[in-house]
Image (cartoon, rainbow, N blue to C red; front, side, top):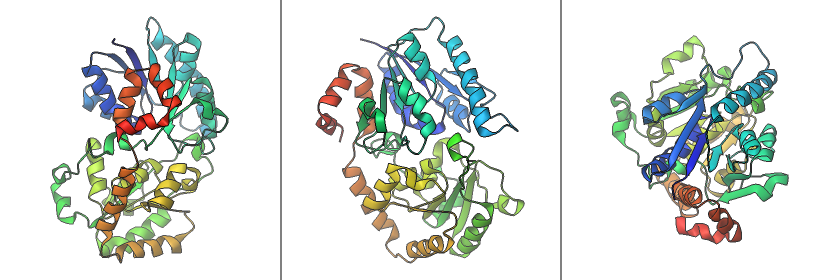
Length: 369
């Protein structure tokens, strides 16, 4: 029996998480509506995929010159108003979202799955979304506190939805020809804007530290930067043009990845690229502990730990078997975790019976290895 789904998501990472699932559901004859907001490259990605969609916030939700908290409060009410207008005359069997559609679903009596990989203690403001959702779909290690009873924990990490070997293979033809001679000998640095409410008061990769890192790496390989924020003039020459849909290939062929983006550090780690996260929040996430402590694929540092950062970079560079060692660690990680895309397809197509099956026996997930 065909179902009516709404996917409403507000972050590019969720596009990657849902892309294969949405295309599969469409191919099976299900009706899938897609709603987004303008954030970073999200709309570009959706357009490139060829989906019909509604952008309920084409102007974006960041209000310049207002404090992040005040901006978020104003946009909460504006978003709810626009979502109510969007829902008028529409009927859905299930909503999958990472944002305020949880409230609309609750009011209209539509089941809602809130999709996240953030621990509640790391992003406490998401409690309003968790509380209003029927279910929380997240990695098995994700901390949900008092709302653990809503948790649908899967044996994997979000990035596996598009980076599992079943769906992704590094392709050298997907990176620019001028970079190909530097395969496994270029350093990929990603800088984020850190403008979310949970970023307030926290520090990431500063310009000063970024300059020191680049100066240190310059004679050891090629340095490329991908950035959300404006960089000093002296660093702009390192900013490298990367096709939005191909960024995972650039991660795969890098020698080392350095960033203050938790999402991209996890993606690099899952691909077996040595990954260094530099910010104030890395230890707040259970997935960091998993990738760092158990699989040794990711290492985090606070911005003030400069000596430790450079010592670890040296440790990586002095490893003659660096690429092979990290691919072995990656294989160990993959062997322990499922294909979450197959899992999500099963969960959504068979909802709500699938929820009962999942809760009755987590061993049911083993069919997705």
